[in-house]
Image 1 (cartoon, helix red, strand yellow):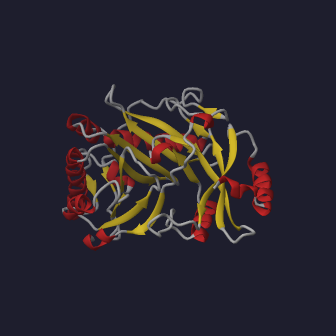
Image 2 (image 1 turned 180 degrees about the vertical axis):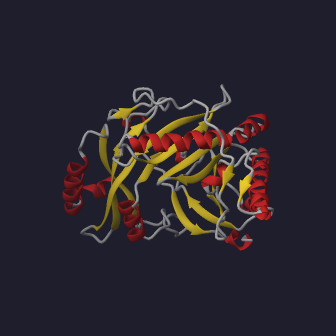
Image 3 (image 1 turned 60 degrees about the vertical axis):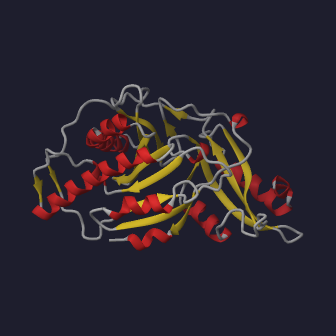
Length: 335
């Protein structure tokens, strides 16, 4: 598909777009064809999405470039996209990709941020809004609908299921994304003040349901659980890898502590004038504690002390774009 980049209109746009993003934040900026109207052998689109929707999504919301669609392994960002039609009638979409390796990489340690100092857990929480729901998002090619249905069946509140599409021929991990309100993440047994008795019961039930979910990860081969939430304008994820029961139990028991530490880090970065749009915590296999893996700022810079940012020359030639395809058939399991 790379020959499509030689199209006159696409080539001119690529040159202008690369100039727009050449500010030193990224080590390298490269164009790539991310969609064409070419069909697979089964007659279906290779990337099953309307190109206009794809372009609009990329140009309105920053889209990460991930290694093997792993939310804990960022390689860069999809910066901009445009659709074209070649002289012989082929429709295609070109994107400008920015790779972190070799760019302006910040570290938490260089900023002097102490990310491990204990913080008191909250003793009061607000009542959950009536419209609160749990989102379960998977690629059905990686995680079967029957397992998702079982997980959703005993949820204490409404569940919405979202179908992801990683568009990779082979995936090594089973990504399971669980969308929760931030206050559910920081709930702990010391919380005494909640608006109503029913509210207290709901918080406790959510905590217990999450514990059941972690036990059910033992049924998966190579799961990556992404507890996906938001805090003060920043998307925050808590990643747990694998299916070891003791590790998952330790991660669950210390999740509230990680939640309050992450909230403090979001606030401190904002106070520095470095507001973040994404913060990812992971649970360490070795130390059995939560730690900040990376943060992406609103100005596109990345902060990380731990991630190996692979140079573009070492990346596979094919890209795996993680797309959301909307509600899946298991949506009927809503409570």
